[in-house]
Image: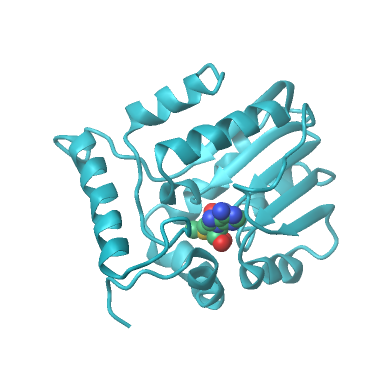
Length: 208
Ligand SMILES: C[S@@+](CC[C@H](N)C(=O)[O-])C[C@H]1O[C@@H](n2cnc3c(N)ncnc32)[C@H](O)[C@@H]1O
């Protein structure tokens, strides 16, 4: 398969589920550390979390160690990634939904924490804003949203906005070149700048 051939999101992850953990633990610099630290950001007394784009559940290991009785709701579009969660955490209080988190209803005023780890760098501003509003609504009064993901910053790029624009136009170019459906999501990394991330979260009602 050509390096630039886009694959539909669930197919991409279904076909890589068996090697996903190895890649994210040993091949990505800071990959596992970025997941393990998430438990430390969660407030004491956290009882209910939603983890969307939960994948194989790598980010849950430390969370379950710190909150052994926590109720976890996980959503992912890839059935093969989700299978790994069953193998890893059979005895825990985890409800799993296989589906598209952009389409599923998250409910209202329920979760203490909503978590996303390494899943949102595939989506554009419009999609993210709608999703952030949905997250805001499903959180309890004192709830917290924690996002662990790729973002573009001045530390890495002279002009992060230009880099973001280039990635989005590259994605469109590939989609058009391969005559792919515009309404389907394909796996291609389009991280946003830190500034744009902040603006989107503020627009959805969050304060930072
Ligand atoms: C890079 S993996 C991250 C998995 C895990 N959260 C982690 O940090 O290791 C991205 C996950 O997001 C899921 N995903 C992407 N878009 C999705 C969507 N629209 N609905 C549900 N799951 C989605 C993929 O199937 C994949 O399992």
